[in-house]
Length: 164
Image 1 (cartoon, rainbow, N blue to C red):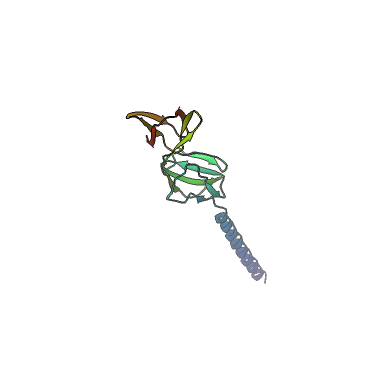
Image 2: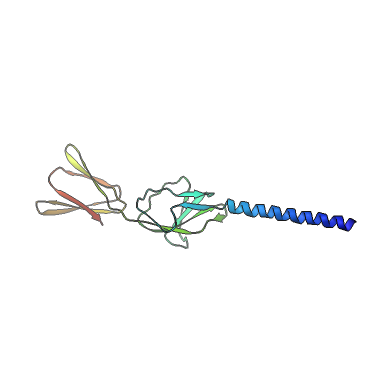
């Protein structure tokens, strides 16, 4: 009788242990860090996108798949990355998501704003810009870094921007 009672207790403990272990495994998968955006293999045109993650504290971004020199970002961090191929993953304490990649496509943009006495040229792309100015057959060049602007005289010149 005592042996039979012990066997029932042992069976209940085994079932309860399996149940608890199952719940712990389920919760560990449910709380695993995950990447939502950008999707793996995605090409992004604008450099000011926002990483979207789930159950993570840090975003690791690298130019190589082994993450030898990663950029570590917090969820609220802002960063503008130059064009190229990037690898990224999410970390939550000691747990990490899988590795995904995305590409930031180069984008050439030249804004010309007319002011009262001059024009303002601004590089609105995500690459260094080589602006050619042609006036009466004479060509000159202006180099603008990303986001940089310069003022030029208001005349009948023709401006063209190309990636440097």
